[in-house]
Length: 58
Image (tube, rainbow, N blue to C red):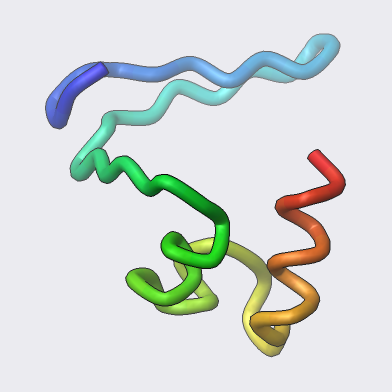
């Protein structure tokens, strides 16, 4: 994958086509949450600890 590529998400009968604008690679969820704004990763108002727990549950 690279910036400019299209990416389709499918869930049951629903589908969403989106375009990748930026692609970053992180070695850990902690590194991801340090580099990115919480709202870029999860719902507004979600704390870092909540996001970290959600990422680890995936």
